[in-house]
Length: 388
Image 1: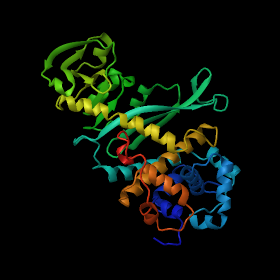
Image 2: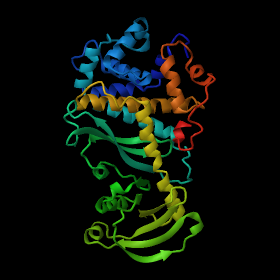
Image 3: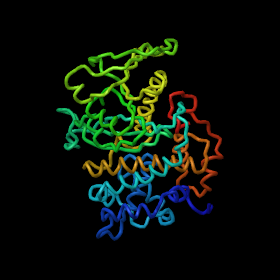
Image 4: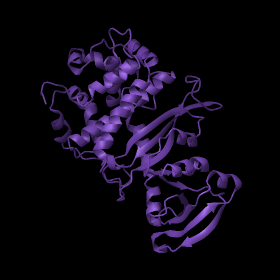
């Protein structure tokens, strides 16, 4: 790459410009805009994510210091905190949601063969939600509890590369199970969920779409055992049963057979019970699949620690959703760059290097690969595959 370009410019060059313009055009994002386009807004917010800016004033101060470089970094409008605040409030957040989905599709194609610990031909998804606490007096629309506000980030994570394939942002009062209605079920895929998602009518819809689910059963689940299958108890599997639901409403909502697997986890000393509609995979593989659900928990923990989604630059629903979607876009963009350049760095390390080199005029690959830097997360066995 041109040695005269800043690292930020070289990073942004990986963005698909035509698709971004399509997203802007779809929602008339630049209508009546003369000096601060949607692209300028995206670049400002991307810069804020990459350099961990605390506020709009912080963003303005840092970018104005590098005023002579901004044009060559892609900025065409004057950077002002008031202009950026107005853009975050007024411009449709769906522009950035759609663009994030474009990047997600690119990343999924790059990571489709990524190993996540189990050799399966199926696409495997983990579904979960995380709560981002907000001040109810500042964010009155973010209903959660009587004296507390929050938004929920419902995420469907593709375990091949840990790419978030679907993200739904709601207020804190929306129950996790309702998000099952938003998912376009993919035939042949496996969906891994915690017991918060137990709803037999919705699980039966997954079954009817010829997809599979692995879900942890609730302790009060009543069932009728049809027969038991032999198990190897040395693997931790205690029982493998073919059952039907026994309660009136569960049986009405899910009239077909289910598979019930009981597994004892030696490390945590916990006895776990799983329900699935997959009758072909070994019982131990079902248990290991559920263990992989922990990847989505790690994803939430990671983005809360390393992306700017716990402190917001605006208080309206539009501003909050815009910031979250641009944060996800940056996460996925760096994942794309990591794969395309075949970088042997964790995502954490790449983001740390970018945060201090954005204004430098260094060849991109050299900046990210030649530094003598040891990944501090590489020794942690619980890190996401994408992050080692």
